[in-house]
Image (cartoon, rainbow over all chains, first blue to last red; front, side):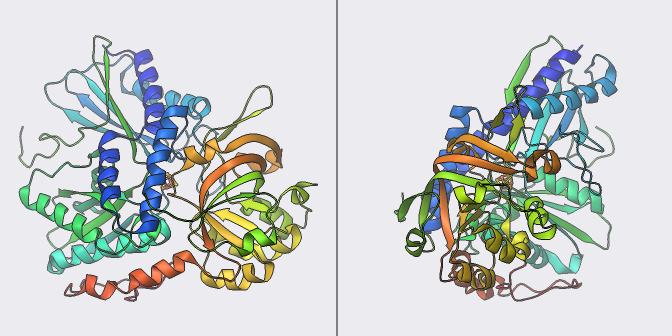
Length: 310
Length: 222
Ligand code: SF4
């Protein structure tokens, strides 16, 4: 049985880690880009970011004052048991969010879209989001938090099969150029692309591709992996670097997730995970032990299955 | 590491200081700055309240920011990180705000349009500095030594209140708009736009267009 108390404490710790410690894979990716960058201004920006992440860790302060929208992705082992059930689990996550907002502090970003009122704790109507997935033959629960920043950098479009790879490339370029100018997307970004599915699935897959896969990870379908590499290269050829200054540092990695879609359509979404690519994961075991990591391991052979049965 | 010209300035900034700044210079500030954005502008420009007493005599540097701050039990304040907010939304208040406040330097995120600099900043002799990244919240947080005062906290809330902050070596900041109306972002945009035709070469258009679609990717969307 996984206890309520352990869950609340772990979720709080994840909030802190996500807000303060830049994940190693993203950091390594930016260092590679910084070495390659030839634009003076873009290069200066990357240097300042590297310094900023050091300062955040040293001082234990959030890397960016816009601490984004904290949210959770939960993967539940098929044999996992949780004290108080799923309702209690969701309460633990809400309690941890409210406490972290006050104690770290995170910026209380969450407000009602119309009335603009807030509870000063990042909790409210449909907030924080909790997304669920399952894993066979496991008795643990994985909690991942993402503090996704950015009002900019996301778009959706209904393409059609005849638009082909050209259509995908154009929409990809359109989105990163639109939001790369002046660095509105706070690039270099992990660009996540959702292809197919229903419209909502398309958005969800793209967001998860950006936020839940690490820099360097490839799609298991070799043809999709090739397209990922091609789009990454294309994105770094726009002439635009960090802050939209002349340079080559736009896309630190590109991840694509696909879903079966309507036979007449090819919907596509694009998402950018910014210079504060904040994510942290913990695995909670029934014996009370907790392991922390920065790779969410969200996409598994089970979650990507195409077959009727497993 | 690249060598960009780096300047250390103290507030209030003088006209001579500003005359020397060029797009692309890196600036670190020491002294006092105040935060002000739509809430403050609306209250002063829109509703006619005078700015809080004394602040505009103390400093002429306006930061478009809402800090990750919390109010402690003893009434003091903790500021963790600070990050600027996108400035282009505030252009409509700037003319009056400059007149009322005497502000000479705006610090924010992403600059304003070149025509805003020409119309609003040049007559005022003001410059625009952008934060860097834009995620350098921890570095900027380090540059804050003290919260001197906060005004209108009850009315406007943490994000919109006017925070008067003491800073030391606050930066890095990068000069976008100089006193002549030149813009670093604009110059870079124009340079990059030269490559767009080649980038899109051979990629056929999608079957279904969208409203408002432009094929001129040198257009800005702000
Ligand atoms: S997009 Fe990311 S780096 Fe930029 S201000 Fe928002 S959270 Fe910070």
